[in-house]
Each structure stands twice: as structure tokens, then as C-alpha cells.
Image 1 (cartoon, rainbow, N blue to C red):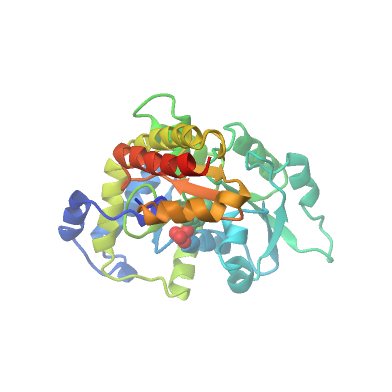
Image 2 (spheres, rainbow, N blue to C red):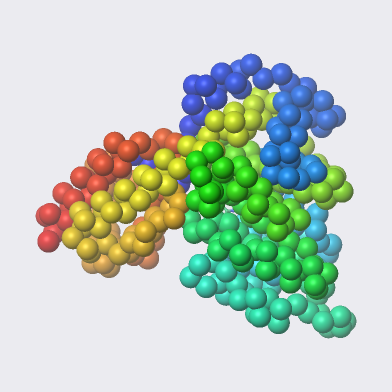
Length: 345
Ligand SMILES: *Cc1c(COP(=O)(O)O)cnc(C)c1O
């Protein structure tokens, strides 16, 4: 039972069948019908003019940043945002873009006044502030629905553009959706505040590989050139793009099961630990458990010995639910956790 990340999912039989049957061509010539279909489908779904298929979320975030910014431009971004903290400094290394990180509050937002104050005046001393980048979900938390529209209004007023790292956009959408079946509408609503959005197909959506960048036609044309420059031009990529189409058609609404499983896991672990694990109710598929320091190593070892793997460090575990962990698995993992706390308490 692998709770480390939703990236560990393996393609289902139906997904593999879709991949087997995919029509292919050379995508660098724009001739792969399946890649084209994936890009057109995603763009229509999320309300953008165009989309670009990329290898990873790191790549599609980078392509977005490179498409918005020139050398010497600046991006306002969260202190713990993936684009700033977890992408090997790509925007600075490959784009000569300066990140301006700002602290985030417990809900993942940056203070609007702090954003405003970080926008540089037109003065030769400063980099040119160009873009505001947000992330949703952030550590499994969904940004408050009224936040991105406010950031967008601020960006518009100051002549800036906006990018969303929506690696788990559809988890946020399923959480905010008004009713079952309304996740795509909710996703489109979230996207409305952004000039570009990056979405992972390889996380909760269950594709083996792939991400999408969405934006206007000119932005995507620029990103396409950058993708080629970075060695990301793919040839008969329809074989993998088919998994993305299958994911968008079959794996969005089911994310609710992962969220329900995370909630069940949270309640179960709290009970099993007799309150020793500090866990906030998860909104989506990521659960953080604070483990008392003296128990951290022992608890992790016990879980591992019994076939349960989680990630985390410094006394905090991260449990992620996904396509390849069932409700039964969650119940078994809770039982295994209970055995440990029965022994140590
Ligand atoms: C996973 C993730 C990405 C992209 O990661 P890749 O492993 O490069 O696909 C980007 N942003 C966030 C918030 C993520 O969780």
C-alpha cells in the first residue's frame, strides 16, 4: 500500500487498451492525431484557446513561465510553491527569470497587500515584475474560491499576467464542485482567473506520464518553441497522449473517492493513535499527520514492515490517496497503525 504520492498510480487495463489502439504520427510536425485530440479536448474543457502536451508538470510550469517572461523579468510566487521550491530553480537557471517569493498563510494564499508591495516600480534598479503564480491545490488544500479572482483583478490593474500551477486542478475542482458531475465546470471556473494553467495527467488522474499547459494561442505557440528548445519535442507521442484522453474522460469525477478515502484515513488514524497523531481534516487527497518526535522513526518502520509506505520528514508524515489504494487498503492501513499505538501506549 503505497501512500507516498498519487504519482505512483499505474495505468489501468482500459487505459492501456486506449494506448494500444492510439493512432500516431510525428508530433513535431504537428501530425499526431491523438496528441492533437488531447490538446484540443483539454483546451475546450477548461476554456482556453490552446493547449500543449508536455512530459511533466515541472516542464509545463517552466514552459508557462518562459512563455510569460523574458530575461530580467520577475515572478511573484509563494515561498513554498512548487514552481519556486521544487523545480530545481528552472525559471532562474533556464529563463533568467527572478523569483520574488512571498510568505503564504495557512490556506496557501499570499497577502494581497504583500503582493501589491512586491510589485517593483518602473526604475532601472529593479527587475521588471511580470507575472503572479499561484498553486491549487497547495499541499492538498484548495485555495479559497474568491482569492484567485482578487489576484487576477490586482494583476490586471497593474498590467501583470497570472499562471496557475494546477498539478492537482481537478482535485480542487471536485472539492469545490456544486454537485457530482460538475467538476469540469468547477475546473473551468478556477481557470478563468489565469492566463495560463499547468495540469498534471500523471497524478490523481492516473496517466503514466504527461502534463498540459493551457493558454492563449500566442502563449502556447511561444511555449511550443520553448518545448522544442528544451528537448521536449516528442514524436509518436499519441501512445502516451491516449492515456491522457482516457484520464480526462474517466478519472476526473472518481477523484471524489480519493478524497473520501483521505477523510476516512484521517478519522481512522486519529482514533487508532488515541489522539497522538495530529491531523487536520483533509480537503482533498493529501493528509498530513504530525507524529510525536519520539515515535516518528518507530511508527514509520512499523508501517513499512507491514507493507504501508508514506512520505515525510521532520515529524510530519504525508499520506496521499489515489487510484491504486482502495477503501479496503485504507482500513487495513488504519488497523496496522492501531497495532503500533496499542503496543506503545
Ligand atoms: C507534482 C507537482 C508538479 C509537477 O511535478 P512533475 O513531477 O514534474 O510532474 C507541479 N506542481 C505541483 C504542486 C505538484 O505537486
